[in-house]
Length: 272
Image (cartoon, rainbow, N blue to C red; front, side, top):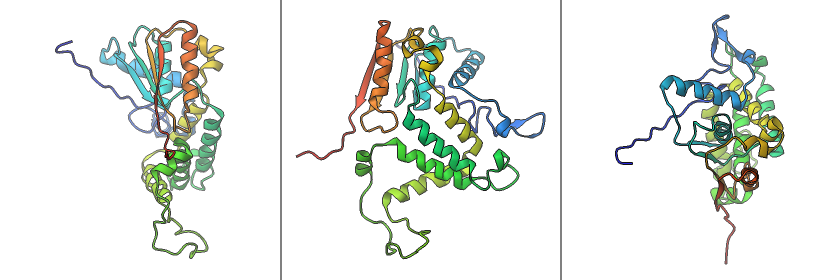
């Protein structure tokens, strides 16, 4: 439509550590961060809080709801909770539930944070923060995002350090692969800027997301959705493999609803 404008609104997740309330938010009753006293958060809670903001802004309808990973969870829930408010639902690299691979890897990340000596049962704001645990958790997360084939494509096999291998018997300086260097560079800034309790909360929210369990079946869960749904997945995605998206499409088709899956081919195997 000539002259029509589309505005992009990005809302931080409820339970995060900036922009929206989370464990790092100051509890007005105590003057201290909520920490583990912050309420348990679900994806449905996140979406309801986003709707409250849009109502406050005077937004009457959304052209599309787009989100990746946990944002894709929210996109689906938007279509379920507010079917007349949303014109399109586009989950990217997401699914209708957390599978067992996500659950176990997220659990290890949570344990990495909570077993850090500085975690102090979530009460670390007056002392040293559990940066090491958060960094390790982030590195674990990065290893789950892409398949082994994509790892081979992304990183060179050559050693990247001038040090001779295994010279340091404690392995403190044993960072000589490109992939190892990449993990460290990604994790260190993240651990300095992201609240540990927020990461624990968001990982727990992720692990407990299961539309089929909440509504009885996945087909019953998506039945209220009126908007067309386009799911986008990558063949090389180790965390959200395409079959999880296919399950959502099939659940939509049970009710004759419009849904399709767009695949990005990340196959990096060498060809003759």
